[in-house]
Image (cartoon, rainbow, N blue to C red; front, top):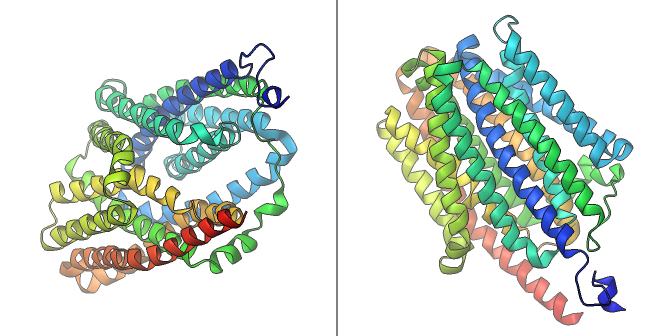
Length: 433
């Protein structure tokens, strides 16, 4: 009887093995095209934005994008229990494809369209990322999750690398805006594999029900959970520091990109190559993550990352060349996509289930965007300071970045004090049970 509940037939063959294997294939195919689409749309949207408005409106796009992102996510959470997972995905996909077609042909005719495309790319990536990962979390058994998640991250990175290659080779041939057709094709393939994965999921016995309860998504309750957990507070601070520093570097990087590559298509091609290299480094570090965690440990990895980023900010503080800034910005992005994300996810392990769910929602959705708002306000302040002290602006910016990453280095020691306490508490809870 027990074997039948676990998905085995009386003859000893696993009835759910083939559907689960097919679900994994569909998931890997989905994240591949998701990485391809995200890589292309990021490069194209950034290049079109700089062509239309220059770098002066970048902080405004980040600033308003956060509030639009909040309302879009709130609307999504409200509609999800009404329509369900499958219909909600089809609705968001249809809207995304329609907007990409609209932008492809009218991007140079409507003044505000590049602005909307620039911050919409982050919103769409967030929505599709969480929809697929929620489905995967609710389907794959915990015994297979660790290995399968590594393959998922690596496949996503490979798709991002191929997306960078496509942009770098085709931007100058077809034009930047027409590369959005690659995104449309990727969205169609994502829809196909998502639907096939949902169909395979129905036949899998070991899975969680896709029940969505909006009352559990209270923002103030989630913030209260973080306030009561020192470990969650330090994880949130670590995320805030990395995203704030990344946004400040993103602004400075785009300023130099605009001057170094004044032609739109050549700028798009360079961004494709640059992010292709960044994603390639991320893929390598994702596959090396398990080895590094075993040999070095979580604490030493975080100390090493913060130490490397602090040293890079010191170099740019003394001499801010295009090569140094590109190396610094590439490091922070590749770390963010690989080792930092893996380490952050492992920091949630000793926490109670309630803290994992509610605290993670605020950190992954709100803290990331709040850091962009804070960095935008800092850039606005630097703009006024530049009027009176134009020669000191770069030193002040990199001095702030250096201070942020050094504070992260110090926060790691406090973080693992609480991390060890949570691990010990989890051990004793397991013993008592």
